[in-house]
Image: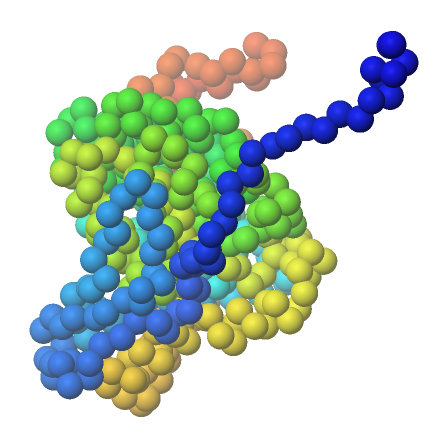
Length: 427
């Protein structure tokens, strides 16, 4: 009997829903030139608003009404958007060159191809809002008010760098910009803390907290989601989905690659991250959602990086050169905006060439000044300057042995340190 029971075939019947018709699902495009404007309606004045119609494939939503598919902008803003993206790319290309010349050492993560995310977000914010991101941060630092000189100076380890040469590629800060963070996903709970501070002090501001698709599986991300929803914080979590976490394709690392749905109890919005106008529209909508008291959102910016994960990664061992070239030639955010500006007769080919020339000249001049900065003096006192806020230092910091103790009262940090402190107060 037992033998017959063991030999008897056992069929497990599952109830599978029958599909009665074709499945239709609209995917977010990565076409950088998908928006439309009637050129007859474009005013001659640079600062007069006009309406742009976004592509119907600009957004996907989760438990959320979509943003308006129209956006008001001006010729002046569109030309500034173009300038900003050209400047970011030129700066990243300079960093690429300096790294290959071995003038920049250590980690260096470039954002070539992803310029529309940083520039589009900034055009939707004010300086009262806050931004925090991961280690691919150079473009965000520039948009938040840093200069090319201070960013390249930081990469070169110079005292005039945006973090006084102590942060490098992954740790850059300015007013309203909380980094540049090197630990994968660690900035997400910090961003929730920034949003909590704004809420606690009744500040009418939103916090944009960015992370990559590779960081989206981190436990601390979900912990931050939980607290943000529990406290109804004014924060826009944003996954920059450039399709690869280091050298691993998203679908090989994540069970759910629809990152805008990861908030579960938080509404989500997927955005064409190659179209700067779609990015601006999404963030404007998200900010209004925050400030209306509706709590957090999870955004996903669908984008693409042309280079490797970092300068040590050629970026071609886990994807084909043809894939990269296809994205460059058909979905480039700068080329896409350029095409729109010409099609809508916002500007002429000659004026665009002038904007290009001005952006590149500015970046090149700033890079040249950064390269001319002298290397910092090899003195140990620099190590102790930025541990405490000036005036709050303890009597001493303990060394390995008593003879290595550092006594603040015994050392004048010097006029250079005082100058940096004055710069901090102005930030």
